[in-house]
Every structure is written in C-alpha cells, then in structure tokens.
Image (cartoon, rainbow, N blue to C red; front, side, top):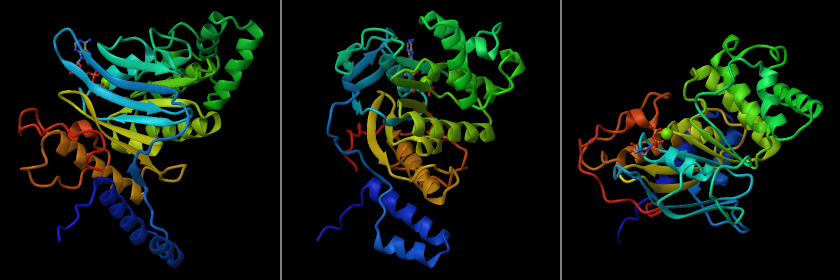
Length: 335
Ligand SMILES: Nc1ncnc2c1ncn2[C@@H]1O[C@H](COP(=O)(O)OP(=O)(O)OP(=O)(O)O)[C@@H](O)[C@H]1O
Ligand SMILES: [Mg+2]
C-alpha cells in the first residue's frame, strides 16, 4: 500500500502542535493537544457570500517583457486581513498597485464590490514603506490636510485627526514636524492619516520594512488592535514570513519567474499573536522552506538549516540560476 504523502499544511500543523506540546508545560495543555487536533494552517476554503476584492486570472507583463504576474486569482472577503508573501521580484507590489488602480493589468480582471477597478479611489488607501508625509506640516496638519480636501469642515477634520492621533498613541506630538519624529512615529502618522480617511480597503506595501525589530513588533501590535476594532479589509505585502503569520487571516504565498500564487493558506493562530510563539515560529520555518523549494532549491540541495528568526524570505531564497527551476506549482496543488 502506498504511504500517503503528508501535505505541506499537515506537516506544518504537526510541527506546530509538537512545538506547543513540548513547550507549554501544563498537563491540561498537553491533554488538549491530544484531544483537540489543532490545525493552525490550512488550505484556504471557499467562503460563502460575495468577495470584496476579486482578482480573476490576472496577468501583467511590463514593457521589458518581464512577466510580473501570471494567471493570478484570489478573492478577499470583507474584513479579511490577507498577507501577500513571497521573495523579491515575485510581483507582490505589482498586484497591490493593480488593486489600488495605479497599474492596469495586461490580462484578467480585478473587481472591488463587483465594480471593475479602473483607477485610484479614496476607498482604497495605499500605505508605503516610506511614510511620505508633508515635511512642512505638523502631525495634526498631515492628517487634517487630506480630510479638508475631501470636504470635511475645519472642526470635523480636527476632531477626526485628534481621534486617530490618539489611536496611534501620538498624543503630545500633535504639533511636531515629521523630522522631529522617529521612523516608527512617522509610520504611525502615515497609518493614522490613511485610517482617518476611513477607506474600505487598506493596501500596505511592506509598511514596516524599514523599522527596527522592536518598533516593528510595536507596529504589529498596534495594527492588530486597530484591525480588530475596525475590521477593515486589508491586503498587506511582506517578504517576512513571521510578519505575515502575526498579522494575516490568510497568507497568499507567491513565487517568481513568473510571478504567481503557489499557496493560499488560512492562519488559525489565536489573536493577539506573539511573533515568538513556538507554534508560529515553526509554521514560519516550514513556509520559508516551502518558498525556498518553490524557488528552485528543494530537489538537489540539502534541507535548509534552521534559519535565523529574523531572516526573511528574500534572504533565504537561492541565488538566481543556482538550481534548475521547478515546474510551476498550481494553487493549492501540494496542500
Ligand atoms: N515599472 C516596471 N518596469 C519594468 N519591470 C518592472 C516594473 N516594476 C516591476 N517590474 C518587474 O516586475 C517584477 C515584479 O516586481 P514587483 O515590484 O511587483 O516585485 P515585488 O514582489 O514587490 O518585489 P520586492 O519584494 O523586491 O518589492 C520584477 O521582476 C520587477 O523587475
Ligand atoms: Mg515590492
């Protein structure tokens, strides 16, 4: 009888459960582990109801013939937090900018609430790694300026700015100019400015990529708190696996050459999530190995050594051309 091959999600769940069992000392916890099988990472299942964002067979080829996206299909339901994860150059930003309406994909269709995306809209706010604040305006003014431009009265804009400055814990810095703030504080202003506009969809392109690890952890806690409160639909680009697992309801794993989706996974770790949680660290290592293998390392090279916990996908990917490319891994096929 053939030995059944364990799927990627099953292996990841087993490892994570083992990690939890061995590290949570309580007898009750161990009993729970035995009695209640935990599936912390599962292939994404179809959901009922209309998708908020529907990406259907989207392809994009830049003028230089780079196939940035190839046949990408995903849907995102209202209030979901979806992380797009993958190595440098796999098309994460291209897909995000297509969702924002800044890029018109060369093939396929993107709809939001059933309407085809044909350009940018204030309902879809983009947050970049570079906070892009007006350097000559104070924290409050950076928030009120776009609100006034949208037609809010001076008093309404000021009240809203106060609310969101409080939300990102920047009270006392309302009058500060951007250069008087730390990188983390500037990012909080940028986040507050985007949220104050009350967009339906928040699109974030590696927003915390330039921050140190401690500040990034703080931003993760803040974003988890805000998301739990407001339940915005979020698409968050990262190449940091642990970041994706800390934040995402779903992790859509992409690979490059051509840019494509290789896995669409539901993350069922309880919130708020701790980046140092053993189960999360194990799942993260497993996903990293999977991406490394999809990028062409898996078949002939020995298994990757345990990675540094802060290492991200880009660093774990092999040098281009070091191994032959594997055939494209269709969505979910190995799960
Ligand atoms: N304006 C452009 N003109 C030509 N090629 C482009 C352009 N923008 C991106 N590309 C190419 O498309 C591919 C996908 O790029 P994209 O920026 O979407 O990747 P990414 O996954 O966001 O990478 P990173 O993690 O480094 O930000 C890359 O090969 C890149 O060189
Ligand atoms: Mg990018």
